[in-house]
Image 1 (spheres, rainbow, N blue to C red):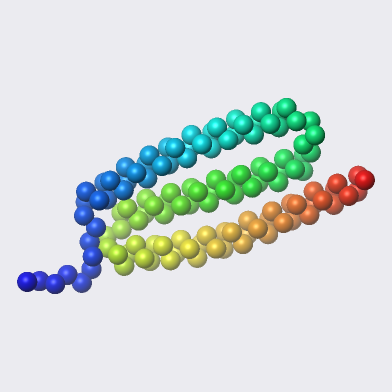
Image 2: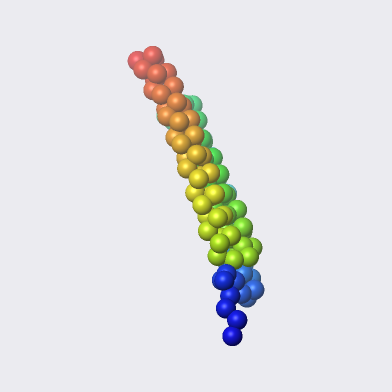
Length: 124
């Protein structure tokens, strides 16, 4: 009896996972489109929303969209992983890259909020 050193993912599981990721991505894209339409409606119907607040909101939505897309990209890579070792390596790289991305996004949002607050304070 031969002993395998690496766990291999069966093709049927890969196909099922790929189909699930495709369906989830399609649902996400529909959600993003609906969210954009809702945001346009709210923005157009609310004169009280300042330009700065809209900028913060737009940036936060863009970051969220980017993060979700990165998750789908990882899912697609994991589906194609040859073995558990590769899957773990992909996940580790993703975690490292996302942490850097989250730190950069936080810095940018903080700067944007500070600018909006300074602008609002100068108006009062």
